[in-house]
Image (cartoon, rainbow, N blue to C red; front, side, top):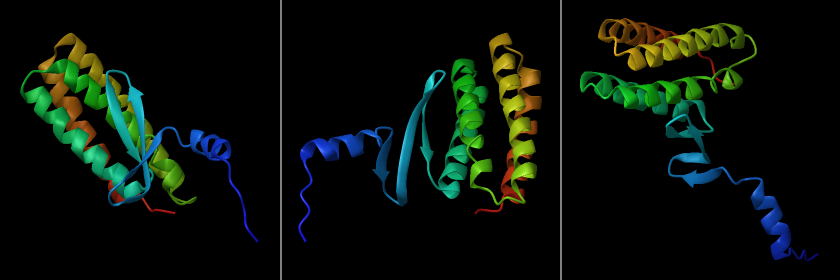
Length: 145
C-alpha cells in the first residue's frame, strides 16, 4: 500500500513544531522561548534542562561579579523559566516536593531581579546563595518519569 503525502499536509504537521529544532544529544529537540530580555533554550529532557539551568546559573554569577545587572536579571528569568519545566517531568509522588522548591526558586529569581534593579549588592549575594541551595535541592529531590 502506497501513501501519498502532500507538501501542504507536511507543512501543516510541521507548523505544530514551530518552536522546536533538533539538537545534538537531545533526541526530542529544544524549544526556544523569548523570556523577558533573553532567549531561552528549553530541552525536552530533564537532564538537558538541568544543564541549561547550570549554564545560566554560572552566567548569572559572572554577570553579578562584573556588575552587569541587566544581564543578571535576564539569567534569573531564564532560570525561573527552566525550573518551571521540571515538575512536569517528575514522578507523580515527587511532583509536589519538586513543585514547592520550584516556587521558591521562582521567588528567589524575582528577588534577584529586584535587587539587580535596585543595585543592591548585598541582597544580590544573599539571593544568589539562596538560589544555589534551592537548585541543589531541586536536583537532589528530582526523580524522573
